[in-house]
Length: 262
Image 1 (cartoon, helix red, strand yellow):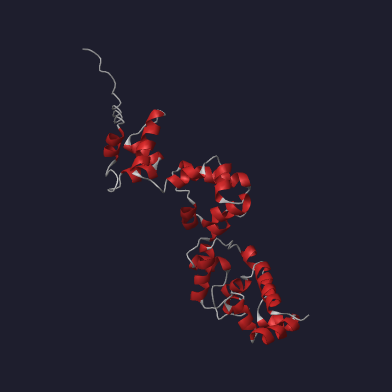
Image 2: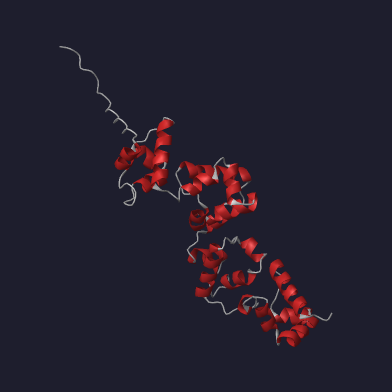
């Protein structure tokens, strides 16, 4: 086959997307015509890979891995939402990273490499074997605890859960919907304004919910935090006053046993 520039770039992109080897030794051995065409069209295989928008060091089979570069790569992949379980990594184009990490002179095992990268292996594997119902139950549990379920925060604090939910349900918002949680209500928690704080306080009061500082801080921590911001009201008490919602009456102390008359 006589590969032109467009054909070469398309083949490189196809192999990248499917995780097939792109290092020069493999191409030279298995696709010599592609290698020769790349040499003729681009001046070399490395140059052809660069023309396809890829950094050649990312497609080399053999990298000069050090403990530090292994840790940084694990952290980078984790930030991108990559499934870092051993099986998934070995089936991906990142298998060379695992091979490097498990060498006795490096970390000796993949779990130890994860730990050295600051990732508890139990968190990496925690959601892998869960079914849909278990993931939904976990989302609901976090919601009851007042956890910030925005995608940005979950990517930072519960990457394994949100990554698994995205694979299972197509998107994080779809997973929340399956758990009976409207994503718009989650997003609003990050976009408080004075008016929205007042509207939410009035809504809670109208629905008969207790709006004491203790109760709101426990059940609606983002609302409480927003209200207490210096740029907004400075305290929960002042937020209540601005909303014209009366302060809840203090709960009376439980009376002790009545004394009998002499």
